[in-house]
Amino acid sequence: MTRWKATAGAIAMLVPALAHAQSVSVEAAGNLADGRAVQAFVLTSKAGMTVRILSYGGIITGIRVPDRTGRKDNVVLSLASLAEYEHRANFSAIIGRYANRISHGGVTIDGRFVKLAANAHGIISHGGANALSAQLWQAETFTAGGRAGVHLTDTSPDGANGFPGTLTTEVTYSVGADDTLRIDYRASSDKDTVINLTNHAFFNLAGAGSGSTDNQWIRIFASRFTPIDDTHVPTGEIAPVAGTPFDLRQWQRIGARVRANDPQLRASHGFDHNFVLDGGNGPLPAAACAYDPGSGRALVVATTQPGIQFYTANGFDGSLLGSTGKTLRQGDAFALETQHFPDSPNHANFPSTLLRAGTVFRSRTEFRFGTIAATGDPDGPGAAALDRLGCHAP
Image (tube, rainbow, N blue to C red; front, side, top):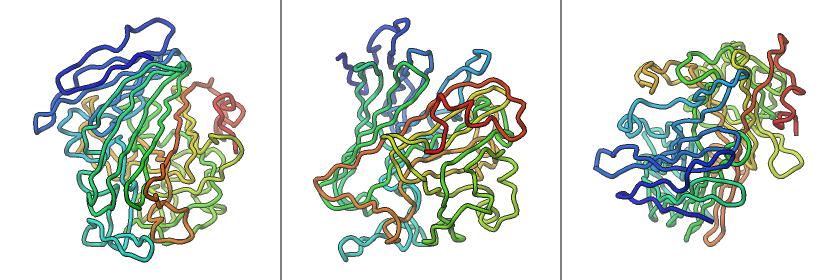
């Protein structure tokens, strides 16, 4: 196995970009405000997909995949500069220690209340200030077992934002022969704590900077979801999607559903909800699929996690400048964040996110890209067209 360890002063290519093989290269990505150097890791699959990841926050700045004519484009939003990422925590980054929200000012572990660095409403979001998304991760590249990737490691000190335990988090991004990005998460702590890890990439299958995703299609394999209150925290109810705009078990246009007259959608100005995945047989069941009829690009998300947060970029208000030179507006992208449920530590009926000292948390998510021919089907592309990517009910 060939390895290259990234340091602040060394930037080198791991292996030559070999034709018909997976590879990873390293390039300079600028400096943070405090002067520390950031590296970018470019993963290239055998099929030709390229994925660009920063050592800062594990941020995905690019996934280039072909459309149905073979034309490649970046299908994740990226910001205009490294400084923009520093000012916009969580944008397409690794999220933790606890992705999404925790309420009530903290968590209770074995009867002891642990106060977290919450806001005035008692909520801590995405792990709080200077969380995993704002760290400069240690990086090690690899090519092994038919895959090429980068292994990122961060050590968060005991008491960071109130969370107990020194937490070691490892996130591995890798590509293989096809147009699939795999993300493996691993975490361990020396004290009992809570954990919820994800990546907050913003997708637009028509290409970054192409405008609204309203005309793109979504399908989520979830019969239930977790409604939220006016602070965007789950109420504790696990509600059926049947008969509501949240029933995305069959193909739906994003724009048609996001504008539905529903109190949950009105409260969050669109989708910003956790879906309870149906799961199924196999080690990595499909969680969600998306499709852009114009380009023919399709995405299948598969995961070991019990939930997925579907977010329709409701907070984009034009204040962010994308790398394409265009400002980012509401609905210009969507996120599909694989996760445990928001606020699980405060709801006994939600899956546990407790990480015992000395044990290991592991999860895997794959983003599988492909293309399908234009179908002309007013009800969506149909499950059969995407079956080869695994887009079918578990």
